[in-house]
Length: 466
Image 1 (cartoon, rainbow, N blue to C red):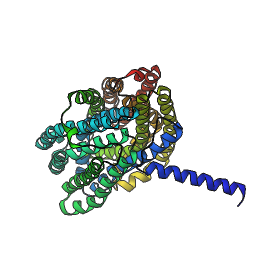
Image 2 (cartoon, one colour):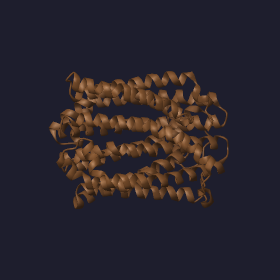
Image 3 (tube, rainbow, N blue to C red):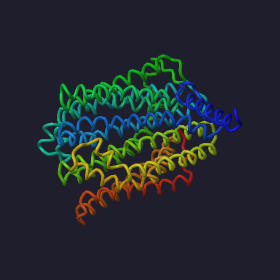
């Protein structure tokens, strides 16, 4: 074998070995060694996890779009309201990631497991309220969102089922946050792959028999199976996180610590989600066709954003664990490395959406009138992807350090005092229509990224105690 061929063989073997390590459940110490290697080991399963979450969003809209445009609008508006549930779940998951990562960095696995159990306890209490309220007020929520009478009629059973099963949404987000904080990103990945794989199989079958409510059933059952997989790995006691029943006894100090991070983390996403709800309400003024087109575009955008979010989750874990180990310099370098990788990925995504966006839209949705709106949205929003990638890493770096307050403040001012008035001005005041909303999105997200980068450089996150 020639020297170049031998070198290529060694390189391929090294890459294959790295990928096997990334996808295994073996514990890795991310507070020492190569930072690039650490980012890759965490990013690969996190990106694959988010890819499946992306597919999940597209699968629903793919099959539902075969029913009617009212069904598509109902799913989109329900998702907009459900973003509130996602926000609470992500806030609690963020708190669990930060606290578990900090304890793992301190080499205190028992307290990491104790923190995970307390987070699950909080989750169960919150879910009861969310499920009852969402199921009871489902038609009113759709109406408030600007849905037509036909959309409310079609969508109410779907919305009720989704909210009734919000326990599986909350648990899936939370426990995956625990696994990510522990550096066990592969188990989080497999949980989501199992959940969404079940949804992909069940969605067309249950829609065939039950119509739109069947999509909600498939989603809830799939996520429920994923949660069962998570709980099995938490309780079997062979990993870093080993929960025992006595750890579910309420512990005031840990609960207060989790809630301190979680409420601002949830507020961070609630502020953003609330803004997206208002944006959807502005879009709803232009009719069901525009609503459906907007929702298809948003699903595609999320499909390509979530892998970048997965890479930024790697930064959160590395920041938390390295701060716990007293390695502040390593935490900062991890963020720089993750940002570089995300920029490269974001550039590729921008090119795909600009040149292939029309083909992607036509594959997902066959209605040409809806497609026109979707393609226009992609052409306007896609050029800002590079900024989105950097902003996500910066935001998750704050969150991983337990500093959920800073991105919450940034979100409030950028979304509520800037994006919403700008969207209204461009779409309604200046008569740009839906394009005004699309321009407001790209301008706001770019602004958030720049502000987050500047605040990160100030370094206040380094001094946060968890």
